[in-house]
Image (tube, rainbow, N blue to C red):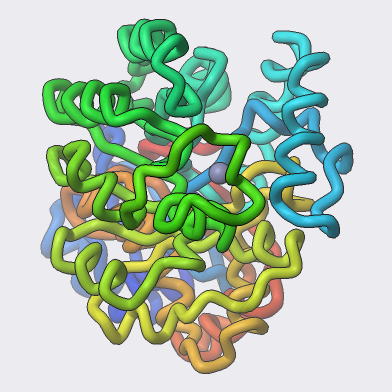
Length: 402
Ligand SMILES: [Zn+2]
């Protein structure tokens, strides 16, 4: 029988609404079997073979970063954002031309380690080079690897992009790296390629992640054919971004839409109805000097909102504690509990891993983070966690210390 291990801490924040003072998490193999108050758990779960007392720490679910591009780590500081998204994209394309495979591998290794050392245990990573799954597995990080494809809506490029979809994502030794598909965006992917990408996500029971309504320019070009992208992207479809994605089979698989700052209210309501998850990237928004996205209105519409770091080409760190602090500052109307939910349960929803990660509950993976307190109440702890980047005291993925 697999021995049980017992993590004891002054506070266990099992989810945004579940708090156990003097709590324990019981692990068996890679999964959690019990969570609750120390005094009753031994009776409930049977004898505990080994235990680790974390003292005044607070145990939480490992944080979930719903959107990263770890392979771009080498681009940190090389692409300024102050002159807008289009100038930044040109700089990224130029920098990518000189990016060697070992640069991308280093970005993946360093990025994965940075995520773990800041309390993130699961990531949604956009992969264009085919190296992401191995990079995650090498550090023990869990995640979903979204194979990104785009063809610039140019039929001569569609065939090569479709071939990339055939690449397999290796699940890693513990099966914690899962496949996903990322048709880049409604303005950069042809209807044929979008259909192939969503069909693949359906057929392999994976999930989709799509950049969506990130800039006013792409929304204007999609709808009207005018603006800064006219002449760069061929002929406009004269349709809304979500209309294009739905026609291309978006709802065939669980999906997350990245950024969405220029989505209209009707699109947000429709995304909520479809069960999609919006992913907000606070550090990337700050990098480009964007107006705060209307997150409270999105939540009021019933949409789920997760947090992502985006890449180091448009952010200074991959630390979700910093992303929580940034969104708390830019959106003071959000409660610490809502911000924490974005970094845990909503992230799990974005990756189609509800009940598996982002929560401490029987059956979930033993993905945990231990932070320095205060441990006297969930309100006191959440206030610090979402504003002050408390020290990380330990991190576990699948029950193993990382
Ligand atoms: Zn992105």
